[in-house]
Structure formats: structure tokens, C-alpha cells
Image (tube, rainbow over all chains, first blue to last red; front, side, top):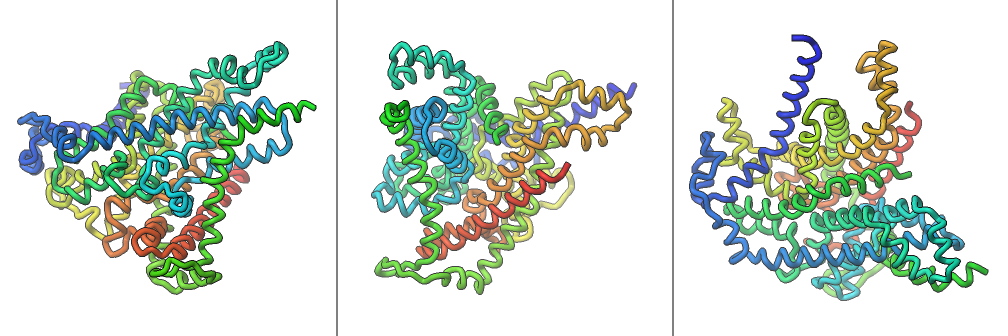
Length: 279
Length: 288
């Protein structure tokens, strides 16, 4: 065996081990979510093939989540919060980026630096002081409290700005010559060209919102407004031994991001690659 | 002239976003600085100015010092670990072998798994009595471990869980950077007789400075403020071994209703994070 194929074999071996490390816990959760509760502990030790295969297949865990634990409401909440953030974030972010690219005004550079600064501040840092503000606005335990503070998003402004800068300026100039208003230029000329960046930004916002934990944890109290990540963490404290349901809840919380990300992976990577090459 | 005509449009396009950013992003930081100088009366809810008293009381409190120590130890381990692993993974995913796209896809999967989800999943996997990880250890002839239940293993377990979720994501950024390195450059250096290691140090690393700077800063800020694993898995225990500053600040605000103390911790945490990030920036600029 020559050196070339041996190093390739080693590479494949490493890749396979790493792939198992990433996938096995998820595959195990998937399989276990279809087990009745009493079977879960039964085959865990000692390890046999039965540990990794549901011999008594059942949808019971998923049924329980939706009938008894209120996951229907939780899903609706998470969807609603995500969708509102995507729509609001895209609209405000693209308009602000439009202004930064096509308008000339005093203090523009300084304002844009401030925008960059806001997207480098992690949400965790401001979450507790933000709570006091939202509390004084009377938005604790409302949809407004979960949604509105996140809508103005520096990252989205940045992504749209990068895209606008690459569009030919003659396009906008000639439309302005013809007497089109700025609002018309934005809605009819620039935005229709923005499909790729709109998809990237929507994905980034939605995934970010889907995964957010600290803010919804702080700002909501009642079951009515609970979102998926907070519900998951509550589940650990309340029903720690219902492993089949916990596995099912884990699978449910991963399902939607996977379904969105797998076909749209290219756009997501483009989006984060654009943020990575900033400066 | 042009400016005057535009003012209406500028306000229409820019004002909503800027108002949102100022109110919900910048103002809270400013307010944390100010509020850390106040204390709130527990019964009346009245606020009174106390100057640096919140900070002074922190500096004589062993709970705070322990929490600071845990935060620093946690970050001293997890940040270099995740950066090195992400770089190694990105290099592995950048090799030109068949089916590499498939392997890249696999490491993209944890992007869909949030940190809280990863915590819930691994919490069951690592269960001391019946968890599958201990079953595997036993099957291999090893002793079962307490993992999150032990004060010596809990922090390490959290580091492992956070890295399982995070490394693939960080590697994505680095992979994007690696793919921009022209192949001709690497060929030329290997024709000149450079070893793999020399090639890495003198060709790849300097060209990766920009994505690397981004990763180092992003990883650091993410981990200094990491909160959900401790909140979900250990609540800071056992024996305060995972009580990081972010959790301590959260507990002071929402468990003990001591907002002034919570803000003071937040400000200290912010200062530490900014200092570390600034030092990293400086170091990455001057090296190479």
C-alpha cells in the first residue's frame, strides 16, 4: 500500500469517527423518542442492539407532548415570534441599509459605526437591564416584550448594505432621473433584486429567534407565551424522568431548523460568511 | 440642496431602526452602568444612590470570588479548545477527498441544534445511573462516571457539551476562509520543499488572520456570557462549581431581587470580556 492511499484511509477513519460523534446522540434521541417509557430504561444497560432500536414502536411520546404538555401552543408561539421577527427585521433592516447606501447626510459614518457596535454586543449583556426597560413599558409577559426589542437588528442592516453596495448605481440613478420617489425605488427596483440576501437574512433571524433562550426566559412568566427553548428547559425540571418525551421534544425542536437549513444551507453559509469577513 | 429634499426620506427609512437600536441595545448598557450605583429597597421598591457600594460588597464576598474564578477557569479552557478544534475540523473538511461534501453536511447538523436542546439531550445521555454514555463506559470495562453530578466533572461536562454543539459552527467560518486560499500558493510552497507544518505556519495561518480574528472574538464573547448550560443542567452546582458570573448576575436579579448587585456583576463581566477581546485583537494584529 503506498503512502497516498494510506493517508486517505486515515482521513476517512477520522471523518467517520467525528461523524459518529456528531450524529450518534441525535440518532439515539430519534430512536428513543419512539419508545414507550418503560422500555427506555430497560435496554439502556447492558448495551445490546436493542439499546439502539425501538422494538415496541409507538408515537406515544409525541402524542403526550401535544395533548398533555401543551406543545401545540408552544409551537404556535415560537412560529409567531419567529415570523414577526423575520418580517419586522427584514423591513426595518433593509430600509436602514438602503438609507446608509443611497442617502448622503451628516454623521452617516458615525451612525453606521454605532450599528456595527450594536451587532457586536451580545444580547446576554443587555438582557437584564433590558428587562427593567421592558418592564417599565408594561411589556413583560406579552408578545410585544418578546418580539419588539429584537426587531432592529444590526446584523440584518449589515447584510443588506453589503448587497446594495454591489448593485450598479446607474440603476437607482436613472430611476431617480425619471422622477421615481425613494420609496418607489426601494419597493420596485432595489428590493426585487434582493432575493438571495433576503433568504440569508430571514434564515439567520429565524434560527436566531428559534434558538433564543435567555430573553424569552426573562420576559415571559405564563404558559401562554412560552417558546420552545424555554419549554424544553422547564421540561427538565418538571418531568425529568419522562425520557421518551424529552427525546421527542428534542427531536421536535431540531426538526424545523433542519428542514429549513438543509435545502437552504447555501444561503445560510453565505450569510454567516458575509458576517465573518467584516471589518 | 439635495440634503434638504431628502430629510423626509432619511427619517422614514432610518428612524425606526435607529430608534430601536438606541432604545433596546445601547440604552440598556448605559442604564446598567448607572443602575449599578443604586440599590433597591426590598419592601418599598425605592431606589437610592449608593455609589460604589455594590462593587465594594462584591469584593468582600467569597461567592463572587468563586464565581469569578469559575468564569475564568471555564473560559481559559473552553476558548482555546474550541478554536483549536474548529481550526482542525475546518482543515479536515477542506481536504480534497471523495464524499467530503457529505462530511461537511454532517458537521452542519449541530447548527440546527440550539444550546438548550443540546443540554437537554446530553443531560439524558450523561445520566449517572442509566445514561447511555455510562453504559458504553461499562461495556468497555470502565467505571461509570457521575458527570454533571460531581463538582470535579460538572464544568468539564458542560465544556464538552458546548463544544459538541459549537465547534462545527465555528469551523464553518474557518472553512469559508480556507477555501479562499489559492491552491497555487500551497503548491508553490510544497514545491519549494516546505513541510506540512511549515506550510501551515507560514502560508495558511497568515492568510487566515481575518476569519481567525473574527472567530477568536466571537467564541470569547459567546463563552464569557454562556448561561443556558449552567441554568438548565446544574443551576451553578454542585458546590458552586459551575456558578459563572452570568448565572450569578441572573440569580441576583430574578431570584434574590437585588438588581444593583446584578448590574454591578454585569458591568464587571462586560469589562472583563471587553479587556480580553481587546487583548486578543492586539495580539492577532501584531503577530505574523
